[in-house]
Amino acid sequence: MAGISVTLEGDNIQLAFKKGEQATAVVMDPQAARSLVKAVSQLLFAIGESDEDDVEPEGDFVDVTSPTIDIGMDENGLAVVSLQAGPMPPFMLRLKDDEARHIAQSLLEILNSPRDARISLGGH
Image 1 (cartoon, one colour):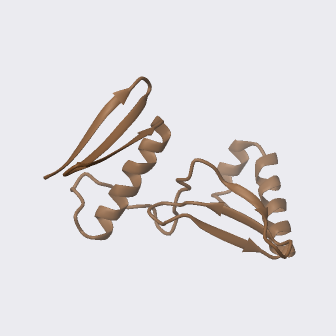
Image 2 (cartoon, rainbow, N blue to C red; image 1 turned 60 degrees about the vertical axis):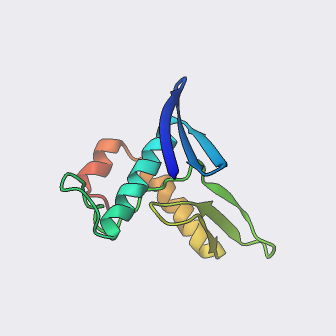
């Protein structure tokens, strides 16, 4: 019979699985554990198995759930962004120069404005 256990390992959370003679354990920091809980909740909601207390994901937005966002170049010199979002598997975005430039400039404009001004603009 398969078994799952969740325990504390210092400030981290250990998730252990056992089926027959095979056992696997994963130790996560609190942020990774929250991301896992959110992803599992979203999957349960998607298949109609959510509790009444579960909250439906916000519209078309999906939060980044990977511990890092990697940025680099492909073999042709195009910008590549690698990340994981929501319940989706990790993926990579290949950007043309003008797309990468637009994203970088837009993010800098957003980050250089005061937070209260960003909120008052209604998320635009």
